[in-house]
Image (cartoon, rainbow, N blue to C red; front, side, top):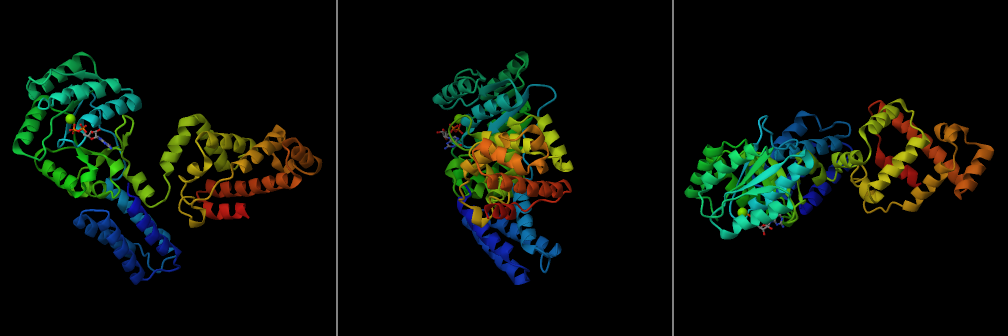
Length: 446
Ligand SMILES: Nc1nc2c(ncn2[C@@H]2O[C@H](COP(=O)(O)OP(=O)(O)O)[C@@H](O)[C@H]2O)c(=O)[nH]1
Ligand SMILES: [Mg+2]
Protein backbone atom coordinates (compact mmCIF):
# COMPACT_ATOMS: atom_id res chain seq x y z
CA UNK A 1 0.00 0.00 0.00
CA UNK A 2 0.96 3.64 -0.48
CA UNK A 3 3.47 2.48 -3.09
CA UNK A 4 2.85 5.08 -5.80
CA UNK A 5 2.39 7.88 -3.28
CA UNK A 6 5.50 6.87 -1.45
CA UNK A 7 7.56 6.90 -4.61
CA UNK A 8 6.29 10.31 -5.75
CA UNK A 9 6.75 11.98 -2.39
CA UNK A 10 10.21 10.56 -2.01
CA UNK A 11 11.13 11.79 -5.45
CA UNK A 12 9.82 15.28 -4.77
CA UNK A 13 11.49 15.52 -1.40
CA UNK A 14 14.77 14.13 -2.68
CA UNK A 15 14.78 17.01 -5.16
CA UNK A 16 14.13 19.49 -2.37
CA UNK A 17 16.73 17.93 -0.13
CA UNK A 18 19.46 18.20 -2.72
CA UNK A 19 19.07 21.96 -3.09
CA UNK A 20 21.42 24.17 -1.15
CA UNK A 21 19.03 27.00 -0.43
CA UNK A 22 15.32 27.11 -1.17
CA UNK A 23 13.43 29.93 -2.75
CA UNK A 24 9.75 30.47 -2.25
CA UNK A 25 9.24 29.26 -5.80
CA UNK A 26 11.01 25.98 -4.94
CA UNK A 27 8.68 25.42 -2.02
CA UNK A 28 5.64 26.25 -4.15
CA UNK A 29 6.75 23.83 -6.83
CA UNK A 30 7.29 21.07 -4.28
CA UNK A 31 3.84 21.69 -2.77
CA UNK A 32 2.25 21.43 -6.20
CA UNK A 33 3.87 18.05 -6.69
CA UNK A 34 2.84 16.87 -3.25
CA UNK A 35 -0.70 18.02 -3.94
CA UNK A 36 -0.83 16.04 -7.16
CA UNK A 37 0.66 12.96 -5.54
CA UNK A 38 -1.95 13.02 -2.77
CA UNK A 39 -4.82 13.53 -5.21
CA UNK A 40 -3.58 10.62 -7.29
CA UNK A 41 -3.53 8.54 -4.11
CA UNK A 42 -7.26 9.26 -3.85
CA UNK A 43 -6.99 11.45 -0.80
CA UNK A 44 -10.06 13.62 -0.22
CA UNK A 45 -9.49 16.91 -2.06
CA UNK A 46 -10.40 19.09 0.91
CA UNK A 47 -7.93 17.17 3.01
CA UNK A 48 -5.24 17.66 0.36
CA UNK A 49 -5.87 21.38 0.23
CA UNK A 50 -5.68 21.73 3.98
CA UNK A 51 -2.59 19.56 4.18
CA UNK A 52 -0.55 21.43 1.58
CA UNK A 53 -1.52 24.81 2.94
CA UNK A 54 -0.50 23.79 6.47
CA UNK A 55 2.83 22.46 5.26
CA UNK A 56 3.44 25.58 3.21
CA UNK A 57 2.63 27.85 6.10
CA UNK A 58 4.97 25.97 8.38
CA UNK A 59 7.71 26.12 5.75
CA UNK A 60 7.32 29.89 5.72
CA UNK A 61 6.93 30.28 9.45
CA UNK A 62 9.90 28.12 10.31
CA UNK A 63 12.10 30.05 7.95
CA UNK A 64 12.86 27.16 5.72
CA UNK A 65 13.55 29.55 2.94
CA UNK A 66 17.13 30.71 3.01
CA UNK A 67 17.77 28.54 6.05
CA UNK A 68 20.77 26.28 6.43
CA UNK A 69 19.84 22.82 5.23
CA UNK A 70 16.28 23.82 4.36
CA UNK A 71 15.54 20.58 2.49
CA UNK A 72 15.82 18.51 5.66
CA UNK A 73 13.51 20.94 7.37
CA UNK A 74 10.87 20.53 4.66
CA UNK A 75 11.08 16.74 4.91
CA UNK A 76 10.67 16.99 8.67
CA UNK A 77 7.60 19.17 8.33
CA UNK A 78 5.97 16.92 5.72
CA UNK A 79 6.66 13.92 7.92
CA UNK A 80 5.12 15.51 11.00
CA UNK A 81 2.09 16.73 9.12
CA UNK A 82 1.51 13.33 7.50
CA UNK A 83 1.56 11.72 10.93
CA UNK A 84 -0.83 14.34 12.31
CA UNK A 85 -3.08 13.84 9.30
CA UNK A 86 -3.43 10.17 10.17
CA UNK A 87 -3.92 10.80 13.87
CA UNK A 88 -0.62 11.39 15.64
CA UNK A 89 0.72 8.43 17.54
CA UNK A 90 -0.89 5.01 17.60
CA UNK A 91 -2.80 3.58 20.53
CA UNK A 92 -4.88 0.59 21.57
CA UNK A 93 -8.46 0.75 22.82
CA UNK A 94 -8.77 2.09 26.36
CA UNK A 95 -9.43 -0.70 28.83
CA UNK A 96 -12.12 -0.25 31.43
CA UNK A 97 -10.94 -0.46 35.03
CA UNK A 98 -13.95 -2.69 35.64
CA UNK A 99 -13.87 -5.62 33.22
CA UNK A 100 -15.19 -6.66 30.87
CA UNK A 101 -14.16 -3.90 28.50
CA UNK A 102 -16.93 -3.96 25.91
CA UNK A 103 -16.07 -3.21 22.28
CA UNK A 104 -18.79 -2.81 19.69
CA UNK A 105 -17.91 -3.29 16.03
CA UNK A 106 -19.99 -1.51 13.41
CA UNK A 107 -19.74 -1.17 9.66
CA UNK A 108 -21.22 -2.07 6.32
CA UNK A 109 -21.72 -5.62 5.15
CA UNK A 110 -18.50 -7.09 3.83
CA UNK A 111 -16.31 -4.41 5.38
CA UNK A 112 -14.60 -7.09 7.45
CA UNK A 113 -16.29 -6.85 10.86
CA UNK A 114 -16.46 -10.56 11.66
CA UNK A 115 -12.87 -11.08 10.54
CA UNK A 116 -11.76 -8.03 12.53
CA UNK A 117 -13.63 -9.26 15.62
CA UNK A 118 -11.62 -12.50 15.62
CA UNK A 119 -8.38 -10.70 14.79
CA UNK A 120 -8.86 -8.14 17.54
CA UNK A 121 -9.58 -10.99 19.97
CA UNK A 122 -6.32 -12.64 19.01
CA UNK A 123 -4.42 -9.35 19.17
CA UNK A 124 -5.67 -8.59 22.69
CA UNK A 125 -4.94 -12.11 23.86
CA UNK A 126 -1.40 -12.12 22.47
CA UNK A 127 -0.42 -8.50 23.19
CA UNK A 128 -2.29 -7.89 26.42
CA UNK A 129 -2.80 -11.38 27.73
CA UNK A 130 -6.54 -10.65 27.83
CA UNK A 131 -9.23 -13.30 27.99
CA UNK A 132 -11.68 -12.37 25.26
CA UNK A 133 -15.22 -13.41 24.36
CA UNK A 134 -17.03 -12.66 21.12
CA UNK A 135 -20.77 -11.99 20.89
CA UNK A 136 -22.56 -13.04 17.70
CA UNK A 137 -25.16 -10.33 17.11
CA UNK A 138 -25.43 -10.63 13.33
CA UNK A 139 -28.60 -12.71 13.13
CA UNK A 140 -29.63 -11.80 9.61
CA UNK A 141 -27.33 -14.02 7.65
CA UNK A 142 -27.43 -17.69 8.67
CA UNK A 143 -23.76 -18.17 7.97
CA UNK A 144 -22.67 -15.15 10.00
CA UNK A 145 -22.90 -16.91 13.38
CA UNK A 146 -21.08 -19.95 12.05
CA UNK A 147 -18.35 -17.76 10.60
CA UNK A 148 -17.76 -16.08 13.95
CA UNK A 149 -17.75 -19.45 15.75
CA UNK A 150 -15.10 -20.78 13.35
CA UNK A 151 -12.89 -17.70 13.39
CA UNK A 152 -13.31 -17.16 17.12
CA UNK A 153 -12.21 -20.73 17.69
CA UNK A 154 -9.07 -20.12 15.71
CA UNK A 155 -8.41 -16.96 17.72
CA UNK A 156 -8.86 -19.00 20.92
CA UNK A 157 -11.76 -16.82 22.06
CA UNK A 158 -15.11 -18.02 23.42
CA UNK A 159 -18.01 -17.25 21.12
CA UNK A 160 -21.32 -16.39 22.78
CA UNK A 161 -24.17 -17.10 20.39
CA UNK A 162 -27.87 -17.88 20.39
CA UNK A 163 -28.28 -18.80 16.76
CA UNK A 164 -30.20 -16.56 14.39
CA UNK A 165 -33.66 -16.51 15.97
CA UNK A 166 -32.92 -14.27 18.92
CA UNK A 167 -32.98 -10.51 18.95
CA UNK A 168 -29.53 -8.87 18.55
CA UNK A 169 -30.14 -6.44 21.41
CA UNK A 170 -31.06 -9.34 23.71
CA UNK A 171 -28.02 -11.36 22.65
CA UNK A 172 -25.76 -8.41 23.33
CA UNK A 173 -27.22 -7.85 26.80
CA UNK A 174 -26.99 -11.55 27.65
CA UNK A 175 -23.40 -11.77 26.34
CA UNK A 176 -22.31 -8.81 28.45
CA UNK A 177 -23.69 -10.42 31.62
CA UNK A 178 -22.13 -13.72 30.75
CA UNK A 179 -18.74 -12.15 30.06
CA UNK A 180 -18.86 -10.49 33.46
CA UNK A 181 -19.92 -13.71 35.16
CA UNK A 182 -17.15 -15.66 33.46
CA UNK A 183 -14.53 -13.06 34.31
CA UNK A 184 -13.60 -12.09 30.75
CA UNK A 185 -11.35 -9.08 30.29
CA UNK A 186 -12.88 -8.08 26.99
CA UNK A 187 -16.13 -8.67 25.13
CA UNK A 188 -16.16 -7.90 21.42
CA UNK A 189 -19.61 -7.55 19.88
CA UNK A 190 -19.93 -8.43 16.18
CA UNK A 191 -22.96 -6.80 14.57
CA UNK A 192 -24.74 -7.10 11.25
CA UNK A 193 -24.11 -4.70 8.42
CA UNK A 194 -26.11 -3.51 5.44
CA UNK A 195 -25.04 -2.75 1.94
CA UNK A 196 -25.67 0.93 2.59
CA UNK A 197 -26.07 3.07 5.64
CA UNK A 198 -29.81 3.00 6.41
CA UNK A 199 -32.04 4.06 9.23
CA UNK A 200 -32.81 0.55 10.39
CA UNK A 201 -29.13 -0.29 10.76
CA UNK A 202 -28.50 2.89 12.69
CA UNK A 203 -31.48 2.24 14.96
CA UNK A 204 -30.33 -1.28 15.73
CA UNK A 205 -26.82 -0.07 16.52
CA UNK A 206 -28.21 2.64 18.75
CA UNK A 207 -30.35 0.05 20.58
CA UNK A 208 -27.43 -2.32 21.10
CA UNK A 209 -25.32 0.57 22.31
CA UNK A 210 -27.98 1.67 24.79
CA UNK A 211 -28.38 -1.89 26.09
CA UNK A 212 -24.73 -2.68 26.72
CA UNK A 213 -23.01 0.72 27.01
CA UNK A 214 -19.80 -0.25 25.21
CA UNK A 215 -16.50 1.33 26.28
CA UNK A 216 -15.44 1.63 22.68
CA UNK A 217 -17.23 1.62 19.35
CA UNK A 218 -15.00 0.78 16.42
CA UNK A 219 -16.07 1.45 12.88
CA UNK A 220 -14.80 -1.12 10.41
CA UNK A 221 -14.15 0.26 6.92
CA UNK A 222 -12.82 -1.33 3.77
CA UNK A 223 -9.79 0.59 2.49
CA UNK A 224 -10.28 -0.77 -1.03
CA UNK A 225 -13.43 1.29 -1.43
CA UNK A 226 -11.34 4.47 -1.22
CA UNK A 227 -13.33 7.66 -0.77
CA UNK A 228 -16.56 5.65 -0.40
CA UNK A 229 -15.12 4.32 2.82
CA UNK A 230 -14.55 7.87 4.00
CA UNK A 231 -18.10 8.89 3.06
CA UNK A 232 -19.52 5.93 4.96
CA UNK A 233 -17.42 6.86 7.98
CA UNK A 234 -18.71 10.41 7.77
CA UNK A 235 -22.32 9.16 7.71
CA UNK A 236 -21.70 6.91 10.71
CA UNK A 237 -20.01 9.73 12.61
CA UNK A 238 -23.19 11.79 12.30
CA UNK A 239 -25.37 9.18 14.01
CA UNK A 240 -23.27 6.61 15.90
CA UNK A 241 -20.39 8.39 17.56
CA UNK A 242 -17.59 5.89 17.14
CA UNK A 243 -14.21 6.12 18.86
CA UNK A 244 -11.87 4.80 16.25
CA UNK A 245 -11.56 3.05 12.93
CA UNK A 246 -10.43 -0.42 11.95
CA UNK A 247 -9.11 -0.07 8.41
CA UNK A 248 -9.35 -3.41 6.61
CA UNK A 249 -8.07 -4.81 3.32
CA UNK A 250 -5.09 -2.48 3.27
CA UNK A 251 -3.31 -5.29 1.45
CA UNK A 252 -5.57 -4.74 -1.53
CA UNK A 253 -5.33 -0.97 -1.50
CA UNK A 254 -2.38 0.35 -3.47
CA UNK A 255 -3.27 4.01 -3.15
CA UNK A 256 -4.00 4.63 0.50
CA UNK A 257 -6.54 7.45 0.07
CA UNK A 258 -8.99 6.20 2.69
CA UNK A 259 -6.29 5.64 5.28
CA UNK A 260 -4.96 9.15 4.72
CA UNK A 261 -8.33 10.92 4.73
CA UNK A 262 -10.51 9.26 7.34
CA UNK A 263 -9.08 10.97 10.42
CA UNK A 264 -9.27 14.42 8.88
CA UNK A 265 -12.84 13.91 7.70
CA UNK A 266 -14.34 12.19 10.76
CA UNK A 267 -12.04 13.37 13.53
CA UNK A 268 -11.50 9.76 14.62
CA UNK A 269 -8.17 7.97 14.29
CA UNK A 270 -7.45 4.60 12.77
CA UNK A 271 -6.64 2.31 15.67
CA UNK A 272 -6.07 -0.96 13.85
CA UNK A 273 -5.03 -2.03 10.38
CA UNK A 274 -5.96 -5.32 8.78
CA UNK A 275 -3.71 -6.44 5.97
CA UNK A 276 -4.91 -9.87 4.91
CA UNK A 277 -7.27 -12.73 5.57
CA UNK A 278 -5.02 -14.49 8.07
CA UNK A 279 -5.66 -13.96 11.77
CA UNK A 280 -2.29 -12.42 12.52
CA UNK A 281 -2.42 -9.97 9.63
CA UNK A 282 -3.66 -7.30 11.97
CA UNK A 283 -1.83 -4.67 13.94
CA UNK A 284 -2.14 -1.41 15.77
CA UNK A 285 -1.98 1.47 13.34
CA UNK A 286 0.90 3.84 14.02
CA UNK A 287 0.38 7.08 12.07
CA UNK A 288 3.85 8.35 12.91
CA UNK A 289 5.55 5.19 11.74
CA UNK A 290 3.34 5.03 8.67
CA UNK A 291 4.33 8.58 7.73
CA UNK A 292 7.99 7.70 8.06
CA UNK A 293 7.50 4.61 5.98
CA UNK A 294 5.72 6.56 3.25
CA UNK A 295 8.61 9.03 3.14
CA UNK A 296 11.19 6.25 3.14
CA UNK A 297 12.63 7.43 6.42
CA UNK A 298 12.87 3.95 7.76
CA UNK A 299 10.74 2.49 10.45
CA UNK A 300 12.92 3.16 13.42
CA UNK A 301 10.44 2.23 16.09
CA UNK A 302 9.57 -1.07 14.49
CA UNK A 303 13.29 -1.64 14.24
CA UNK A 304 13.79 -0.88 17.91
CA UNK A 305 10.85 -3.06 18.91
CA UNK A 306 12.30 -5.88 16.89
CA UNK A 307 15.62 -5.39 18.59
CA UNK A 308 13.99 -5.14 21.99
CA UNK A 309 12.11 -8.34 21.50
CA UNK A 310 15.39 -10.20 21.28
CA UNK A 311 17.60 -8.34 23.72
CA UNK A 312 16.40 -7.88 27.22
CA UNK A 313 15.82 -4.44 28.62
CA UNK A 314 18.66 -4.45 31.07
CA UNK A 315 21.09 -5.22 28.29
CA UNK A 316 19.67 -2.37 26.24
CA UNK A 317 19.99 0.07 29.13
CA UNK A 318 23.56 -1.04 29.75
CA UNK A 319 24.35 -0.56 26.09
CA UNK A 320 22.91 2.90 26.10
CA UNK A 321 24.97 3.82 29.13
CA UNK A 322 28.11 2.57 27.42
CA UNK A 323 27.29 4.44 24.26
CA UNK A 324 26.88 7.66 26.16
CA UNK A 325 30.14 7.19 28.01
CA UNK A 326 31.89 5.86 24.93
CA UNK A 327 32.91 2.73 26.83
CA UNK A 328 31.71 0.64 23.95
CA UNK A 329 34.20 -2.17 23.30
CA UNK A 330 34.77 -4.69 20.56
CA UNK A 331 33.17 -7.22 22.87
CA UNK A 332 29.95 -5.18 22.86
CA UNK A 333 30.28 -4.74 19.14
CA UNK A 334 30.45 -8.50 18.69
CA UNK A 335 27.36 -9.11 20.78
CA UNK A 336 25.52 -6.39 18.84
CA UNK A 337 26.51 -7.97 15.56
CA UNK A 338 25.10 -11.27 16.76
CA UNK A 339 21.86 -9.68 17.85
CA UNK A 340 21.41 -7.79 14.63
CA UNK A 341 21.94 -11.01 12.74
CA UNK A 342 19.24 -12.75 14.68
CA UNK A 343 16.83 -10.09 13.41
CA UNK A 344 17.12 -11.28 9.86
CA UNK A 345 19.13 -10.56 6.75
CA UNK A 346 21.17 -7.42 7.28
CA UNK A 347 19.89 -5.69 4.20
CA UNK A 348 16.33 -5.74 5.50
CA UNK A 349 17.42 -4.61 8.93
CA UNK A 350 19.39 -1.70 7.47
CA UNK A 351 16.34 -0.65 5.47
CA UNK A 352 14.63 0.24 8.70
CA UNK A 353 17.32 2.70 9.77
CA UNK A 354 16.80 6.27 8.61
CA UNK A 355 19.60 7.47 6.39
CA UNK A 356 20.13 3.97 5.09
CA UNK A 357 16.71 3.68 3.57
CA UNK A 358 16.77 7.16 2.08
CA UNK A 359 20.30 7.38 0.71
CA UNK A 360 19.88 6.92 -2.99
CA UNK A 361 23.26 5.30 -3.48
CA UNK A 362 22.43 2.67 -0.89
CA UNK A 363 19.09 1.60 -2.29
CA UNK A 364 19.23 -1.97 -3.42
CA UNK A 365 22.67 -2.31 -1.93
CA UNK A 366 23.54 -5.85 -0.94
CA UNK A 367 25.18 -6.14 2.42
CA UNK A 368 28.03 -8.58 2.17
CA UNK A 369 27.32 -11.06 4.91
CA UNK A 370 30.74 -12.61 4.41
CA UNK A 371 32.32 -9.32 5.38
CA UNK A 372 30.48 -9.58 8.67
CA UNK A 373 31.68 -13.16 9.09
CA UNK A 374 35.24 -11.88 8.74
CA UNK A 375 34.69 -9.17 11.32
CA UNK A 376 33.23 -11.70 13.70
CA UNK A 377 36.14 -14.08 13.19
CA UNK A 378 38.68 -11.34 13.85
CA UNK A 379 37.04 -10.24 17.10
CA UNK A 380 36.71 -13.84 18.22
CA UNK A 381 40.45 -14.30 17.78
CA UNK A 382 41.23 -11.46 20.17
CA UNK A 383 41.77 -11.88 23.88
CA UNK A 384 39.14 -10.32 26.15
CA UNK A 385 41.68 -7.69 27.11
CA UNK A 386 42.27 -6.80 23.46
CA UNK A 387 38.54 -6.55 22.85
CA UNK A 388 38.22 -4.06 25.65
CA UNK A 389 41.32 -2.08 24.72
CA UNK A 390 41.85 -2.33 20.95
CA UNK A 391 44.73 0.17 21.20
CA UNK A 392 46.82 -2.78 22.50
CA UNK A 393 46.58 -4.46 19.13
CA UNK A 394 49.97 -3.90 17.55
CA UNK A 395 52.93 -5.90 16.21
CA UNK A 396 52.85 -9.59 17.10
CA UNK A 397 49.30 -9.39 18.47
CA UNK A 398 48.11 -8.32 15.03
CA UNK A 399 49.79 -11.25 13.37
CA UNK A 400 48.39 -13.70 15.93
CA UNK A 401 44.84 -12.39 15.42
CA UNK A 402 45.20 -12.45 11.63
CA UNK A 403 46.38 -16.07 11.72
CA UNK A 404 43.77 -17.12 14.24
CA UNK A 405 40.95 -15.67 12.20
CA UNK A 406 42.27 -16.75 8.83
CA UNK A 407 42.45 -13.15 7.65
CA UNK A 408 45.31 -10.72 7.05
CA UNK A 409 47.15 -8.15 9.13
CA UNK A 410 45.62 -5.49 6.87
CA UNK A 411 42.12 -6.75 7.65
CA UNK A 412 42.82 -6.62 11.38
CA UNK A 413 44.25 -3.12 11.03
CA UNK A 414 41.26 -1.98 9.08
CA UNK A 415 38.81 -3.29 11.63
CA UNK A 416 40.64 -1.65 14.52
CA UNK A 417 40.75 1.63 12.62
CA UNK A 418 37.08 1.53 11.67
CA UNK A 419 36.13 0.66 15.20
CA UNK A 420 38.06 3.71 16.40
CA UNK A 421 36.06 5.88 14.01
CA UNK A 422 32.85 4.31 15.16
CA UNK A 423 33.70 5.04 18.76
CA UNK A 424 34.33 8.64 17.92
CA UNK A 425 30.96 8.75 16.28
CA UNK A 426 29.35 7.24 19.33
CA UNK A 427 30.88 9.87 21.49
CA UNK A 428 29.08 12.41 19.30
CA UNK A 429 25.93 10.38 19.61
CA UNK A 430 26.35 10.45 23.36
CA UNK A 431 26.36 14.21 23.12
CA UNK A 432 23.04 14.11 21.37
CA UNK A 433 24.31 14.42 17.79
CA UNK A 434 22.87 12.06 15.25
CA UNK A 435 25.59 10.56 13.07
CA UNK A 436 25.30 10.82 9.33
CA UNK A 437 24.97 7.13 8.59
CA UNK A 438 25.02 7.69 4.87
CA UNK A 439 28.43 9.36 5.07
CA UNK A 440 29.67 6.65 7.38
CA UNK A 441 28.67 3.96 4.93
CA UNK A 442 30.32 5.76 2.05
CA UNK A 443 33.47 5.99 4.11
CA UNK A 444 33.33 2.35 5.06
CA UNK A 445 32.76 1.39 1.44
CA UNK A 446 35.98 3.06 0.36
N1 LIG B 1 -7.56 -9.34 1.70
C1 LIG B 1 -8.23 -9.10 2.82
N2 LIG B 1 -9.47 -9.62 2.97
C2 LIG B 1 -10.14 -9.36 4.12
C3 LIG B 1 -9.58 -8.56 5.13
N3 LIG B 1 -10.48 -8.47 6.14
C4 LIG B 1 -11.56 -9.20 5.75
N4 LIG B 1 -11.37 -9.74 4.53
C5 LIG B 1 -12.30 -10.54 3.73
O1 LIG B 1 -13.44 -9.76 3.44
C6 LIG B 1 -14.60 -10.55 3.39
C7 LIG B 1 -15.69 -9.98 4.29
O2 LIG B 1 -15.26 -10.09 5.63
P1 LIG B 1 -16.27 -10.27 6.86
O3 LIG B 1 -15.46 -10.28 8.09
O4 LIG B 1 -17.16 -11.42 6.64
O5 LIG B 1 -17.10 -8.92 6.74
P2 LIG B 1 -18.43 -8.48 7.55
O6 LIG B 1 -19.55 -8.70 6.62
O7 LIG B 1 -18.23 -7.02 7.81
O8 LIG B 1 -18.49 -9.27 8.79
C8 LIG B 1 -14.17 -11.95 3.79
O9 LIG B 1 -13.99 -12.71 2.62
C9 LIG B 1 -12.84 -11.73 4.48
O10 LIG B 1 -11.99 -12.85 4.37
C10 LIG B 1 -8.25 -8.00 4.93
O11 LIG B 1 -7.67 -7.27 5.74
N5 LIG B 1 -7.65 -8.31 3.76
MG1 LIG C 1 -19.99 -10.38 9.58
